[in-house]
Image 1 (cartoon, rainbow, N blue to C red):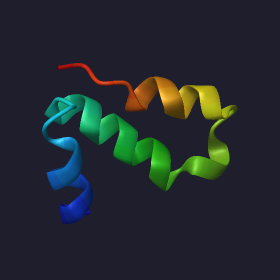
Image 2: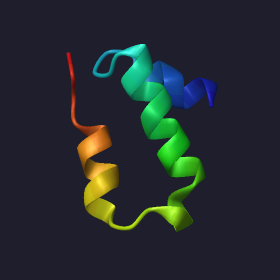
Image 3: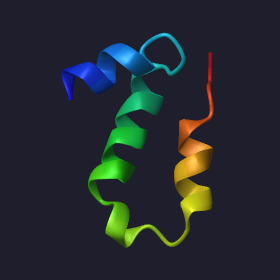
Length: 44
């Protein structure tokens, strides 16, 4: 997780990073990859 945090820090805020990380950990429950892609969009 430390590597993930370091790599996304320049492009995602802490809140967005946490939401994306949670989505990845619960990937099997996502309804669509579209949800994951929306979370991965830069918010900086």
